[in-house]
Length: 244
Ligand SMILES: [Zn+2]
Image 1 (cartoon, rainbow, N blue to C red):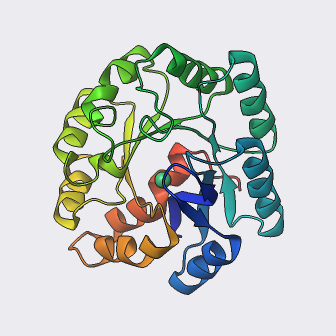
Image 2: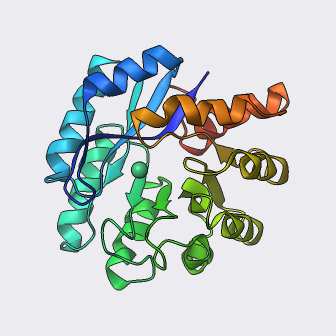
């Protein structure tokens, strides 16, 4: 069972990218990804529209696509909560903040609504890390991880190689933190898996990286059990996918 815990759909006006349904599904088929967790990119022109498009995919490809929420938090709280609730009712399983793409440090007042909404609807928070320092260094997330010890917090990209040392620090300091490893160096991924069993998960971020991110795990000396956990078991547990 391979679960890609970090995938996107649609246009990003911040980073100038676009992920199409065809590319997403074709790549999953080609490289044996059973399920992808899909969210809007931080620069989506309209998060509601992209959430609706993701919801359509969950119906078109049952069990293969699971939705995740991503909304720029610089909007009114009522509007933010309303959209989170709408998505949770559609079956979306997590809430993303991109401190760089949303231009919102995790400790900023506008980020309060992200953590409060996740707490209210009992879903994990995903925080982009890596590109975009100083907003995005994993240690910058420690105050929030400690403020919300009941929330599962997923550090996306685990610092993306250059800040992976800080992924070790936050995971060591905060037992509610989990690590997704796209853009990390393979040897650091093996170290993370060894040090934090059951807390590390595969993600691709873009269709072009599915093959290489999978191969990082498969080309190491990980045990069969550790590999199964990292490629699907951890995501299944963190995002409560058992009954899907
Ligand atoms: Zn991403």
